[in-house]
Image (cartoon, rainbow, N blue to C red; front, side, top):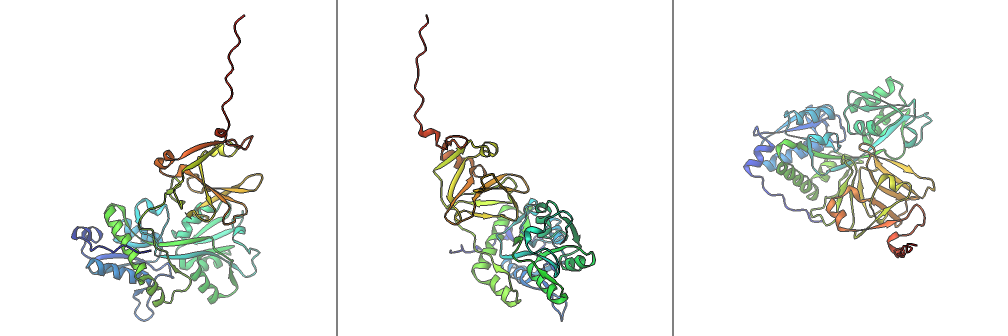
Amino acid sequence: MTTAPLPAPSPDLVARIAPSGTLRAAINLGNAVLAGRDAATGAAKGVTVDLAGELARRLGVPLELVVVDGAAKSVDAVVGDRADVGFFAIDPQRGAEIAFTPPYVLIEGCYLVRADSPLHANEEVDRAGHVVVVGQGSAYDLHLTRALQHATIVRAPTSQAVVQTFLEQDADVAAGVRQQLEADAKRLGGVRLLDGRFMVIRQAMGIAKRRGDDAARWLAGFVERAKAEGAVAAALARHDVDGASVAPAEAQERTVHEGSCHCGAVRLTLPSTPTEATQCNCSLCRRIGGPWVYFEFGTVRITGHPENTAAYVQGDRTLRTIRCRTCGCVTHWEPLPPTPGARHGVHLGNFDPALIASVRVRRFDGADTWRYLDDEPPPPVTAPDAPR
């Protein structure tokens, strides 16, 4: 995909992004994957520091680093005007006041347990009586606060203190960024990571929404250029970051349709424009509404799933219905087993009303005959009996 050139910022745009004449960038040392301190000088260094420097160069202003030790403090700095931009994991709760760019890096969120723990799978963590330690205000704190229904969450003051808190409080699970947990496991011994991940953390830049939509769009363009020109990959290599990957480019032209649940935590992109939808009257669909459109499983792009969703499997276990954990909106259903090429249903109510109005909606009798009702001829009209 070709990324559009980044236009030179106007003086007005520079003044709204860096109103003091200096770009103040919040750098979160709590995310050790992306930032840390130089052992010799104590100065902040890392991927985010490099990107902040490149942004200041493009704006033509000096750079000032606002160094903090936790994600929540980084958010507060930007929202409170103590910093102009920051580096955050994308999360709908933070999005109330911060405009995020597309992600520049993808990082895995994982669980760590003691070597002799009976836990061996991510699905076993959310049980009554389990204690899970997270870094206060981190992306995985926000996610697990929504996702965990039975386990108890304990918050360490920073992400770097998670494993120490886990050990001191004899907790069951520590949650965090894979690289940080792997480093702690190697240093401490006697602990292990569970296989897989519980979420993918999408790291982005952000600016306060009150700085204006055009400032947010220009910053998004900066991130896309940094990915396309290799600046993000070079920074990962320069700082020896292992396990994080450069996020893919965002589409420059919207040739497909995008929708989301009400809160925006789950987003869907259709691979093509639907022309027909189905309104079903089965016992499930008549409760959750519709209409539904269908695509091959694996062709609909979905973000925020499974980390922001919950699933319901109905009686015959041929599909599972997916809803957002935060706002409760049903977004789609998946076939069981989830085989590429199988049929995949998407709830069209999560898309622009104009798209819904443009498709033919057919009525399907899922409650009884398992046939499209509009395929049946209308019943014959019978003349009433003549009065006697």
